Amino acid sequence: MKRDLVCGILMLALAIAYYSVAAAIPHSMLADSVGPQGLPISYAIVLGILSLLLIANTLLGRGGGIQAIVSASKSAGRSDRYAALRACGMVLMGAAYVAVLPWLGYILSLALLIFFVAWYLERRLTRWMLPIAAAGGVVFWVIFVEILQVPQPAGLWPSLI
Image 1: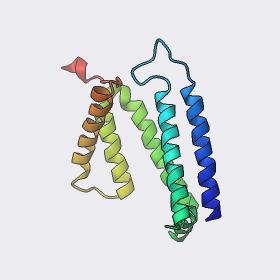
Image 2: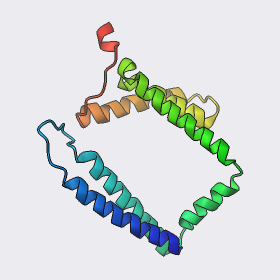
Image 3: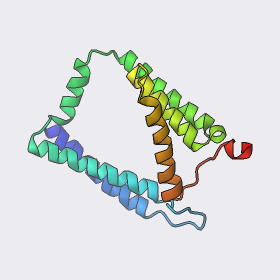
Image 4: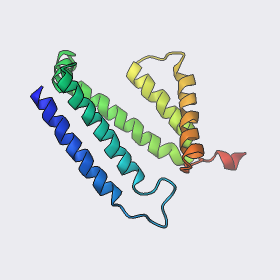
């Protein structure tokens, strides 16, 4: 319990420091609508919220915090080697996504990434994976391209039509 509280306080201090540094990034004439501070400030806010949740969870005595996670992962019975290989598989899928993104475009590349990650984690094909992957690609495209006005690669498709 004490370890979780100390970790939460340290991470909250880090989030505050990170936010102050990110907010000091100067605006650029070449910046897009999000700006150079957008992503770092978002990370700082998420880290701050998670830190506050860890502190509150520890003070309220719920769940056991980090110790419960560590003991649950130890009791899961998976070897460290197996977990490392699974993590490498996830990294390889991310690298493949980055590699095909310029050619296939954002929607199709992201839909394929969602599909293969779900298949990889589930270890079997379900009837919902393909529709969810397709919807995920479209939803993220609407969020980033239409709402946030962040340009994403279109791929080779526009030149074929």
